[in-house]
Length: 101
Image 1 (cartoon, one colour):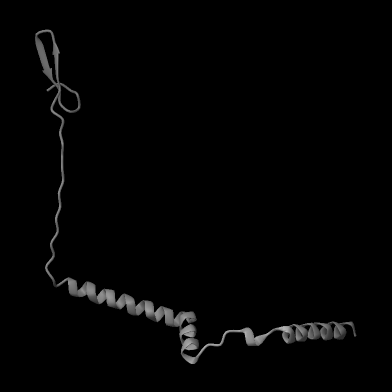
Image 2: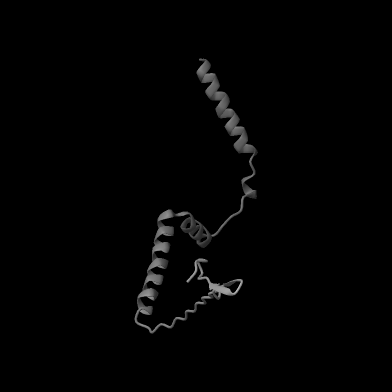
């Protein structure tokens, strides 16, 4: 009996909530808007769109393999001059590891 009373109370509460809700304030959308919204929310459709986009890029990459390419490169290497040590009348030239030659 207690269960039945609880179920009736819940039913009345839900019914009162639904009756108090103003469904006319909800926005109405057309068929095309509903279709677009459904497609945006569909994971299968999103996956197929991503697959289509990937195929377009793969096609472009395959076509670019047949075209000539041009590339530029540059580098700069600076080597310090070997230091020279002077001790009295004798001078010693060191290499970059500071060992005598």
